[in-house]
Amino acid sequence: VVTELHGCRQCGSLDGTIVLSRSKGAYPVDLTKCVACGLVYYAGSWLDEDPEFYEYYAARIGQDRDALYDPLTGQRLNAMLRRLGRHTPGRRLLDVGCGEGHLVDVARAAGWDARGIDLSLAAVEICRSFGLDVDRTDFFDEKLPRSSFDVITMIELIEHVAEPAAFFARAEELLAVGGVLHLTTPNFSSLGRRLLGADWQVVSPAHLTYFSPRTMRDVVAGSTGLDPVEVGTRNLSGAAMRRVVGRVPLATSIPKAASVPGEGYAEEQRFRHRVEASPHLRLAKAAANVALRVTGTGEVLAATFRKVGHRRTG
Ligand SMILES: [Zn+2]
Image (cartoon, rainbow, N blue to C red):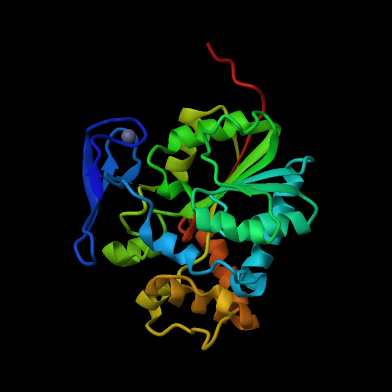
């Protein structure tokens, strides 16, 4: 069931222009760019839980870590935690929208006091089977203690959120002074989106907001007192590279845990595993990332913000 929203998800302005239209697929998707604040959003919204993800998690209950957690992702999460650990001395971490709990698991093994929340019962059941501290709790639930987390992570979550400003404000409330919010989301200013247009694999009725580095800074600055630590981009998708060079290398087989739903995503995973397996391709990727970082056109937007003090309210 899809409902239509009227006005921008950030500022409420009714003044918008359609910047991308996708007519193929099960649902047509028009993305609107707000004339007032620049945020790109999808005006429709799901009333029910995304059925694809519900079934995805339900089918994975009862499997062990090796079947669910991609080791390549584990390495990336460990590197992310080491970077975040340099920004704050505390080790209390909350992963919002934790899914199967890979980040919570990696964090716990690295000595963090890590917990997660998710709205999917099946995902929570998987996490608990691994002994992880994960609850089916809404981010706005009063049970979550204020000013009590050193790191809050939102990995590929904010694009699913109808009112991102409220999420940022809630993260600020839950962070301890000196703590950091870290999030990743697809970059609407990416080379991939520019090359692929309506074929960009991110375009979906399940994704409601589409940030660029600039709109990410603006929305967080407009809704919180958080200070930007780093707002950057990285990576080129296999689909974007194919648009430029034709054929792209794909791994012939990948760990079972790396398989994800959706044809486009499955191909991206095979691309990623192929690149990581080759020293030459890893070097090419590192070089490409320098250019993508400088131009802000990488596929992944990664942002870290710090809570410098309590906001005066009232
Ligand atoms: Zn707006």
